[in-house]
Image (cartoon, rainbow, N blue to C red; front, side):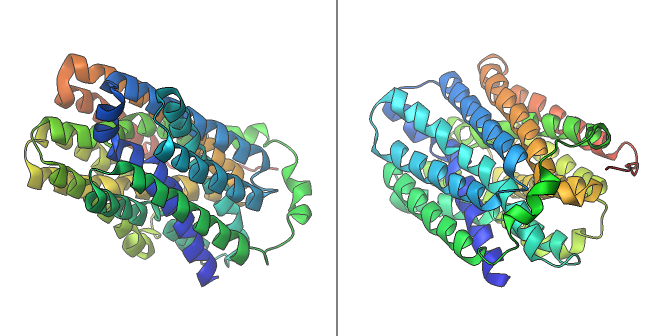
Length: 380
């Protein structure tokens, strides 16, 4: 079980930290080389979020039946897209590879949720899911350190991301091969969830969409905001590493926060992330403060995504992968909208105004999750 958790954490670290979220990390250098403006790059980021959402839709359909196939698809799309980004000099191919690479994260999450759910004992599932989901943090740290050591050669960083993704995928497929037969569980997963299941997820769906919108500001434009405010490339990369440090801290706090109900944990995570988003928009000219708020945002973001997994698992554990896929689809729809809207608002309102709008959306997400206790719904 320990080896499977490590391998699963590595897949999340690769598909999220080294690939999907690293697009914003390398955005300043890539924009200069390809001659793309921030609004255009925002549209590419939005397209990447749509690809993530489509992949998570596939997870919704087959995640509870064929989780290992989803993990394989994650490795192929994230790894292949990364290599494509590294090798191409054509804007069209670059855009396509950037979009396709994000599908890997959308496939990875629901597949790993089901694999871990099968392998872990009931008492350990929440902690194990939190640890695997927190792989985003180490991935971000690795991405920042790689970019720092290789700068300005961003292409080699994408080659490394593709290689790590492939190795991590192979490890999960190897260590997860002894899990229960997927065909045995297929009978219970063939039907779409009933109306009661959807009704019990209403608050989670609205909260996920709002937080996705709010989180788009930091991931897509955080480093650009720092550089435009006068920060050096090294300082901006350090801030990105601190995002990863905050995300990695989730592994340490998981045993403590697991005592909270999922909705309470959601509020505890999203409100600090909202405050950090607003603070980064206003403090991008102060590197120490910007670094601190990046660390807080990293913890809040990773903890919030873990809370979504626990939220849907609490509602119906037998459809944990389905629920994760649905919530992550909605989350990334919100993030796609946020990437496009915040990118347009930067030109009109500046970073402080645009990040303020995003922070308001993230704060609303926290309130949506905390406004009332979840009702227990009998789901057949």
